[in-house]
Structure formats: structure tokens, C-alpha cells
Image 1 (spheres, rainbow, N blue to C red):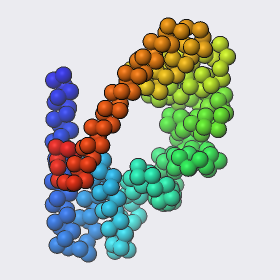
Image 2 (image 1 turned 180 degrees about the horizontal axis):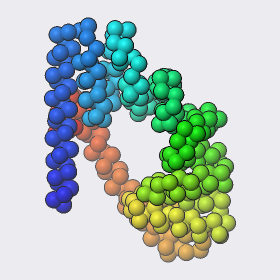
Image 3 (image 1 turned 60 degrees about the vertical axis):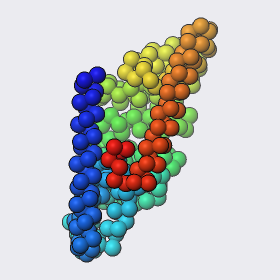
Image 4 (image 1 turned 180 degrees about the vertical axis):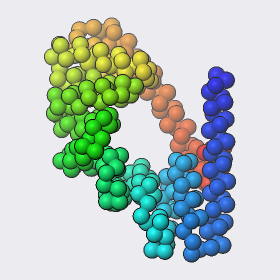
Length: 272
């Protein structure tokens, strides 16, 4: 508990420092409206606070100044930031443009191709998504998330066997990510025969060992157990699922209240 409290305190102090940076840079931007640096620093501080709306606003205020700030216009990390924020705000065309610019500025950066593929995947454009993820792997063969995202592309198209092969590779490269095991288990669950259901249970158990609060995993476990004829275990997992879902709904409501507070008072550091 002490470690958690200390971590929370450190996080709160960090958020306050970002807030101070934003306040100072806002003042500089008002005094020197033709300079890009204050707005870019304020955008970065908002990004580090996960204040996507404010970050996007700063970036758009920067647009008329990019012609006099070539160091910013040619910085792929600036466009990566804009792309991530646009995706968070579900502005998919804008996110795609930003990540495409990243890949043009640094075509050998595997992360940028993976991010671009993620936008195509979000948009349901699976062919382009697979092409981008494939390029990320060509540049960096041992990139676990690119393999994972290829798996997600196949899974969303119902190509479960191809997805399983990609997830196997992702797990071989990084066995710490619970999402890899979850999606592997769900693919086996979809295949549906007894052998695959038993494999699904094994992967889902590993998922729960790494993340006991994965409500998706608990629901899949209940489903697998019921199909395997283990009714009591299915009911037990379903009970856990309902409890976790209730906690999640409670936390979501708390987040909505905090978001409303931040929108009403952007300087409310406690809410942040």
C-alpha cells in the first residue's frame, strides 16, 4: 500500500509539473503569438498529461506557424504525437495523415509503420493494415506488437488459424503481455472443438494469472467451461465477470465525473 501511495504521489506531482509547464508556455504564447516553441511545449505537456483535447487544440493552433518552424514540421515525433491524439479522439483520417507523414520522414522506423497499420485496422482496412504491419516486421523482425497486430487483423476477419500463428510469434518474443494470451485463447474458443476449447482455457488461465481483472477473459472462460460441460465452473467465472464489470462501471463513472471537472476547470490539478 505504501508503494502504491508513493507511486500515486509521484504521479500527481508529475501531473502538477506538466500543468506548470502548460501555464508558463500559455503565457509565452500570448506574449509572442508568432512563435511556435511555446505552443509545441504546451502540446507536449498536455500529451504527457493524457489531456488529448488540449493537446489537439495546441497542435491545431500550431498549424499556421509550421511554415516558420521547419524543425517542427520535419520532426516525426511531433506528427506521431498528433497521430496518437487524433486516434484517441477517433479522428481516423487525421491520424492516418499524421502517421503517413511519420513514415515518409523516417521510412525505416518500424514503430511508425505499426502505428499506421493500427489506424488502418481501426478503420477496417485490413489489406493496408497487414501491409503496414508487414513492413514493420521487415524492418524489425522481432517486434512483438507488429506480430500481435497482424494476429488482430486476421482475427477480425475470422481467420483464426492465421491469427494463432501470429500470436504464437508475439508470445515467443514477449511473454509478459496478457493481451497476447487473451486473443490467442479467444481464437481457440472460436474454433470451438474440444481440443481447441482446452487450449483456450490454458491461454485464458495464463491471461488471468497476469491480469485477474480482465472481464473479457472471465467471460470467455465462462463460455469455454459451459461448452466443456463444466457448469459449476462456468457459473463461478460468470459471477466473477459480473463483479469485475460492476467495478469497471463504477470506475468509468468516476472517470466521467473527473473529466467533467477538468472541462469546467482545466487547472484542476487534483482532478487530473
